Image (cartoon, rainbow, N blue to C red):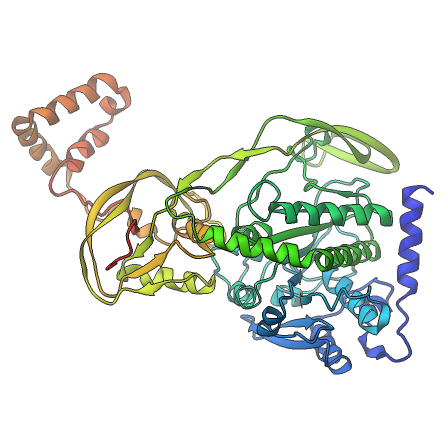
Length: 591
């Protein structure tokens, strides 16, 4: 039977099972099910269903609130397990893995909410695979971006086929939550990080619908870790197992995010690297856990997208149940190794290697023609004419930014503690306040050069990029300073927060921009006078100045840069400028 026919039959059979067993409560149907998945319900339905599932199955479901949105709406979650382990402590005591299924982080992409409610209604009603819900805890967040969900109308996603109306991508404060995992600006993310820290999920399933071109593939399954680390075997086995299951169901999954290297140019192919931890899946990776990104194809009709999302979650839960003990052992080993990275080199970012492989990608016929609208070119896809595109895929990576971890950890001066401590707390990172002065502590201070501020804001921040280096020094560590040890399971995440060259560090996100701004100046006429005195008194300085004039035409041609040379070498120069306000230490303050 052709794949498309097999999929259609599977979908029809799945939709036919939406009838509720005689002993179950009809109120557990979603509005999506009742409408044949033409619509999706409002958030009041999530609140109702959460309570209704707990009432119907009190030994297997616990409904609880884990946060409140800026608009005052409750953030609801469900813990589901037939083992009865419905709290973080009970799950840990029983040695059960926790799987966090997160729906609606982009609230217009709401497939996950309706898929998992549908699955739970049937599984708890007697159709669950034997032992799967007993072997783990499913932690279900139907809608992460609740305020965005209630910004509800048609055409929020014009390149998406259904439901008829849907929520919005950003929160009420216009944060994109899937850029917020490290910087944790939004109240919603702080709440989610608290949930993650309490439950310590082995796996996060982040349920989306992708944007992009028109093609035949209906879902992509990607995630981390896939390239390195203790958890890599589990990450790869999980991704590959889900894909194998979806193929057996008749779906057309791919194991890379299907976004062209060049927009609207299928011939440019695809590149698949390692995302930064501002995104969900890589955030789980730097916590030594597994993140799987599920992206249904937005041009597939909503019933098909919900069904493929449901099957993805089901395959993932079966795989976790089958491998629970070995994958939990890997996670424990990953935590032990992470606590021992002090003094070692750590890969912070990866880059894609330009070694493309040609793949067969199932697309459609298309034409590129001039556009009288844009004045440029436009692409038209013909969904009646399937084609196989032979396109390049670049999916090999190599370490890019590699940084040495401090042997002991970091010291945050008391003046900056109120900026940094809330972020450490949000991520569950161990830290302590120094109780007494420690004089003459050997340390390293990072001094920036080539400081650049982004010309436009991102997520409300003016981002910073700079070169620089750690320089040895001795400091007096004061009572009230904060010591953050590297010897902890969250050490990799800690480095992403506090290493200034990390693209998702607090420094890179602009939380410390005042440290990289000039605060004092020397007027030009004063500099002119001082420069003449300095040249007369310091032969070495004079030689350096003359060499710059001779060897650097840009320097020689810039009066401002030439005067700045003397100011930077003058006792009046502000030595705090460009000095990152966090120290590295190789010894615990005070021993």
